[in-house]
Image (tube, rainbow, N blue to C red; front, side):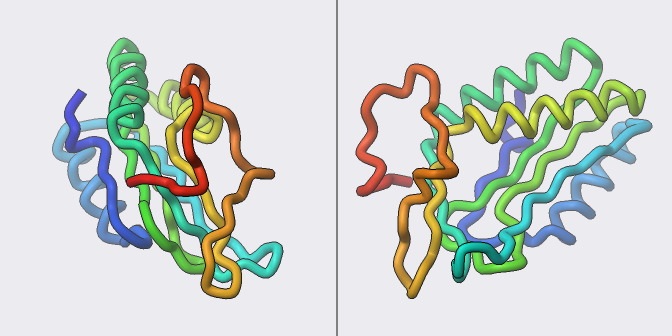
Length: 155
């Protein structure tokens, strides 16, 4: 796995720039399918945005596993995620799968995004009245993570 395929950004993602760079990369590698997913912060529960903490060592291992899995099928996964604050209507998460064939790319992107939601070491906070409030109702326990001091958070 190349760490260049896992991109971490402070604040919101520049979706157009990342998409364009990834698309060009896929064209240069002669992939026939380029499937993307973009997660956008939406208005709900009177939030002003979302804020994210992540733990890079576990995220890197999780991503490496997915890279190996995709590689066995001739595919490549790429991902970009934010840490820190992301305002409404901006993106915090992008994922892409490149493959010679669309069926493989479509299947892998769905599995990748669902597994990301359940297992990636990224903690989400609502921003309400300028303060970060841990979004415990939308969080999942990470298998094997042990005890973490979520309230303090760490990047």
